[in-house]
Length: 208
Image (cartoon, rainbow, N blue to C red; front, side, top):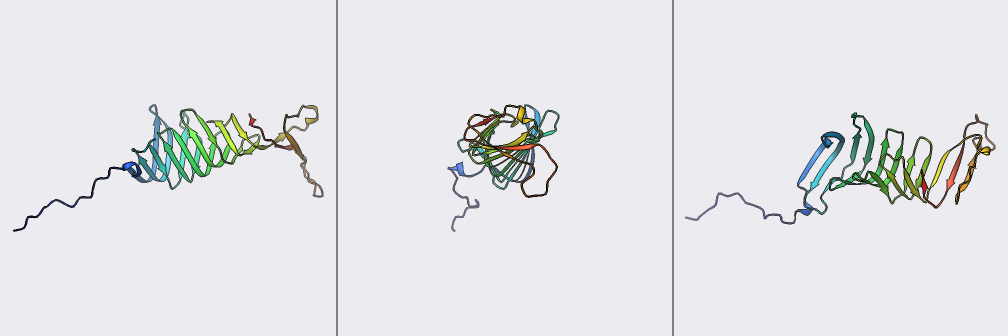
């Protein structure tokens, strides 16, 4: 009689597991706490966790919506991106139609944005467009604090209101070229007067 084994067939063990996620989850809506307080909410179609990479990472290849809460559980910041990578649960790499909105009325758009959660800062080396309640800035690189109230934009130009009595104020800016844009364009129907706008074109960092 021939001998036979009742053991089911087994595939060979996988030793190089750095390219294989330890967990894959679909249709995720998850709350994340910090020091025992709920501070973030993640919504994504696909969430993969890699524990053998260096550094460890989590990937969101089908889009990401991230909400950040303040201590009163009100949303103080939204972040959306087509693709996202989260390294060591600290550094976010956001790619493709990145948009950041915060509760002070600031909106940021770019194709690439890094967010260091430990140092509470954003930065990018791609074209970035920032709109605040009082001005509009765009440039080829960006660096700011987490609230986007203190920022630096290189190779930028900006548009912001100038008071009507600007003739009495010192509006000179070193190393900058100012082109005044009248409210009523020539050869068109006059429109109600409003605050003038100025366009600033510069090759030096602009700081707020």
